[in-house]
Image (cartoon, rainbow, N blue to C red):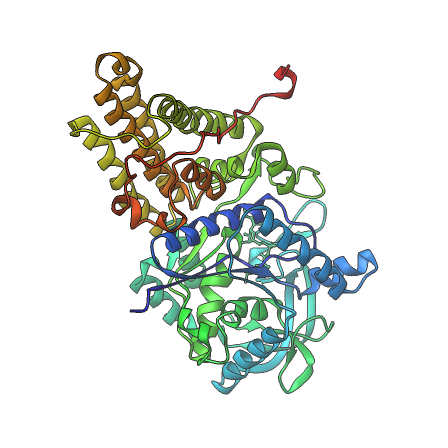
Length: 515
Ligand code: ME8
């Protein structure tokens, strides 16, 4: 029987600079959802990549005295390197300058043209290069510095040129019906409300080509025009699924289950993208989720302020899983959040080093010493034993529901709720005291604790894959028994040899207090 498919994407990043913590955040969160679904038995396609056309790329390349292709090649590599560093498990990394993508973008354009949705006209209006977006005059404001700014706070410039238009206005009612009939199409709810009021305010046709530069995909049949970068960018999601070859092996993944993107680009994904797809006769993705922004102590990161956080430095300083855990546990996914040294140290030490790390270290050292370094032999289970074992199973249901609506923080809260309860169980059962009074009961308590840690390790894999693997290694859990079906089906087997327990979550120690 073929498994259920699950197709998930990140946004594709502009490689006009090096990746920052916002890019890392999106990739880590999307990776956790992809891994969760793989462990849950689904056939997953996880896509990430780089968005290499547009004026922003062209202008940065000019400033650096190189071609946009050289800039794209150099920086796309940095994005791939970051993926590797973050342990991102994407199945494909698409670059919009690839041949397959030219073919796919020209094919969707042709379909939209054949449907009568593309016509030639002249564009005169405001454009933000930083956002690669057109804005209505009423969305902009002239500030005291005599510069006009768009709604995201980036400067806009007036452009006038011949351009092709897409009949976006024709899709207004259909879009409003889509949002009303499928409230889950846009998440979280605040984002949906925002989009609904934008669409209700009236959609105008969208300029979809440019003639004043040539860094882009040529418009089929009129090569003086290149496509507006967002037409080509959004198309990446179907390119990777094999479009225009609807018999491609990968086409079975389309429609995507969810596009994970930042809140600043929700409009492109939930207004333009469905309209393009309808026009071309292609099914819509099931959901678009706009996560929040990560700020540095409440301030927006920008190159000019000099507070951009380099994810590589964070990984080197705190450790990868410490960073992954912090970002996913601390910031409710969908809301904005703050990065700070104190917050990451606090999460690392309280949750990972103390709660999970110490519990594993203490219980497994006791097993090594008192049970001949083998999985202990349990006797009859008491109510307290059954309760903690059951809680670890129940956490999977809670986590599955939470991850299904991208509430990653809630999934982790449920899993670490089991960790906290397991600590209370261990402290209350006092296996160190039972050693003298009731060694058989001690074995039962140690077995139950180890088994709960195994379940926690399985559940933690999507979020902190490297550390969870180490945790399962020290419990001698076979590599093919680590999926969610194994949570109950593959309990620890008494008498199995265990390797020497290794500390997995080091405490973060402040440098000045280190010696
Ligand atoms: O928008 N915190 O690319 P991009 C969290 N190429 N997320 C952030 C962030 C922050 N501080 N800053 C950016 C683009 N992001 C387009 C996408 S998709 C067809 C084309 C998120 O490099 C941002 O919201 O500016 C987006 O989802 C992603 O990082 C890439 O941003």
